[in-house]
Each structure stands twice: as C-alpha cells, then as structure tokens.
Length: 332
Image 1 (spheres, rainbow, N blue to C red):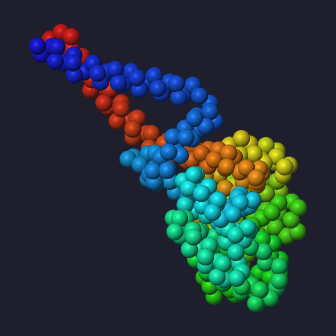
Image 2: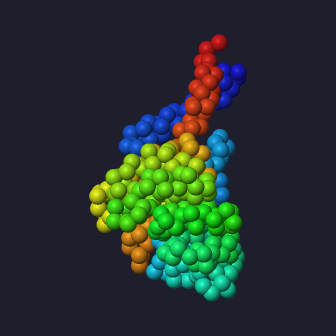
Image 3: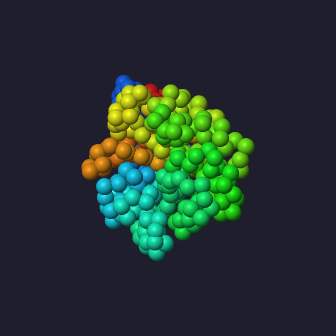
C-alpha cells in the first residue's frame, strides 16, 4: 500500500516536469524574432488585463507604451477612441489634426479632453506643436493649449534655435517640459537628438528632446547611444521601424524592420526613463490598424521577453530544487 501511494503521488509530478522540459525545448528551437512574434499575442492579452504577464514574479513594465494620434490622422476623434480601446492602450500623445485635440477655439480643446477622459484615455503630451513665431503671444497660446489639455509635455516641431530663450521663459512659468522633436536629415534645424541636446544643454532642465527613432537613424545617429547621451532631457520617444535606414519610405510595422527595439527598451530601462514610448505609424494612413496592432503586439512581446528573462533565474532555481526532491521508490 505504501509503495502504491508513493507511485501515485510522485509520478504525476515527474510527468509535469517532462511536459515542461518538452515545452522549454520547443521554445529554445525558435529564433529570437520568431519567439517574440509568437509571444506577442500572449503578452498583449496579459497587458489587456491590466497586469504584466509575469505579475506574480516581476515588477510591472517600466516602459509605458502609448500612441501618437497622428497614426490615425485620416480618422476623427471617435475612431481614435475606438482604436485605442481595440489596442488596449490608454495613453495618448494627441495632435491638432482632424478633431483629435483642436488648439482653437479653447472650448473645442475642452470638449476633446472631456471625451478622452470619459473613454478612460489619458493625454500624456500634445504635439507635435509648431513654434514658428518668435513672439510672446504666439508662444503663450501654445502653452495655454497644453495647460488646457492637462499635459506636462509639449512635443515641439521646428522651433528655431534663436527662439529657445523665449520658450524657456514659458517653460519656467507653466512648469511644462518642452521636447523638441528631431526630424531627420531633411530638417533645417534638428536632424538628430544630438543637435537638440547641444542647443538646450545650458537651458532649464525642462528643455529637452522627443527622440523619433526613425528620423534619428536616418540622420546617421546611433539611436541607442543618443538615448544614453540625452538621458534626463529625454521626455518622449516616438517609435517606428524601417527596413533601410537611408530611406524614409521604407517604414514598416515595428518588428518587421531593422530598428534595435530590444536595445532601445533595455537602454531606456537602464537610464530609468520615466516617459512614454509612443507608436507613430506614418504609413497606410487610411488603414492603419493592421500595422499599428502588429507594432504594439511586437513591442509588448519584446517587453515581456525582457521581463521574463529578469524573473527566469529564480524560477529556474525553484524548478531545480523541486526536481531534486522527486524520488520514486519502487523498492523499500
């Protein structure tokens, strides 16, 4: 009787370990990119539930994924809200395009803010916002816009270097961070984040950068190194992917190109980046959801992989200790 009892208790445990071993061997046979693609849906499902896939063993993801409303530039605000829900995203970098977040009249801004709030969507930044006039009234109107939206970051498009001292005055008055968006080699002023850093390094620490990773690599700048150098002056990240770093038209869903997404996330985590990584999907404007969905799922898969590896060591030790405790005594 004692012998039969031991077999009944220990054999199921052994079988479970055998099944676990087979699963691990199957996963190890996948390439890294294949693994990330196959795990993306699982990671997305976990995120949709408001918890990390590894919630029991790891901290929540330190990287906050969001969306640039420019991705949905061909659609109205109601569709933006619908798409955000389908993607299970709550954080939005909103732009004055269509009726996403009108700058004027002020009542239209307020109406948009109320609609997003009612839908459970949080505005995290406005922009890109153009700063073309070196005049107090014009600059103030843009900071008032950000204030009405309730955000603490303005993603700024193309202010001239000469305007920065004037803008700094309003940054101090409104306590809103000013993130200059680099726009690649075609841009008159801001090819890469390094030009931005050079221009703001002696100004208020709330003067900084929004790194657009696609424009950065097209400018010939190492995007991972740029993140390290910009450091505490990095206030937003716009994510995209390219198959050719010399060709703006080669944009594809994130994960299908050459962008070092994993290294970007690891570097952001290493510098304790507190902001958002917002998808800016600039292709297929009339049908953006397939590419946007694929991009968000891929990024969630990468983050799930990073977090999974962080918690894999203690799990592995526990499995090892448990397996050594299994004994099957067929004979006394």
